[in-house]
Image (cartoon, rainbow, N blue to C red; front, side, top):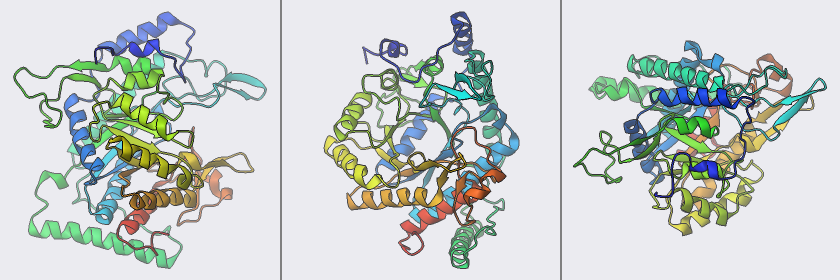
Length: 466
């Protein structure tokens, strides 16, 4: 791309940008970031691209999940381990259900920035900037805390590095070892009929693991650890540019991107802040700064698309960020809402099929299903989340397409932020452990239940997957 460079986005109009009071402090922070080592490697990024290619071709399924807005305070052993164990349990259930490998991508080690509908809010009669994420400003509702601070960009790097360091060490030390007992406690399931069905899946998964051990199929390191990739929304382009580095293919080696040789990535610019980054629904303008930045990256990328996306605009967007139509390069993360998915998803699928692009289709059933209770608490209903996911599965099947994955906001903690689920959490119970600093997340039981239900759909148990 002769007309692209890591800073060419600066010539385009930008949405969700941040205005700092001290330009010199901003440059000082960015200069420090440019000197710091990458958080991930091009080799790892290319390995993920290989897996997503398989997802796009219908040979694998991608599970992506984590916090809505990651906080610096989440950089703790217990928090990290809880997320990893939850994603592992969910992926085992999905492997059994879909009978396909599962690619695990966590919203972790960098999901510190959040877009906001309004850059300002009024609290107790005082107008101040909205909370934009820990890498921009503080959550405390005071003008000083909400003042954008460029030193937080550097803090974001070191918290990401610490999280990723513990994540890598834990995985290599057996955190994801399938020989270890998994907590499949189903005490939260009120309906005995549903509990029986969940227990049947758990028994089948554990029986399969036991069989592998008996016949010696688990001696490979593949059952002792897993690949877990990191992701975040690429919102702060100043930050992302600092970690976008040119990797040159070794002389004499093949440069074909179809070879997917992990030891020898193709020449290109890789954003080494994460393996996978996505463009949000608020920043996906074809002529905007974020699309300009993303179109030059060698990373696999995601694009959130919602009800306001016209099918023709979607095709223009794909042609811009993936002109060579690389299979699996782009993940389309659909987020319509349960009441709108049937209206918009079919047209988007048909437009992409006509365009010749082969993408990963991923359902985000969270963002379109947010509502506020009469008490002023932001929440999501489990039934609406399940409904959008189930409709997406059925619509793809009806159009000769397939849903390649799901994108969830979840936590490994026993929070009370989304209503419903097998524990029948009500709006009155939201205040028990409502801990999110942005959007409500599925707790560990609700997230696992969703995996059970999707597995039931793939197994053809329509009664189960209602």
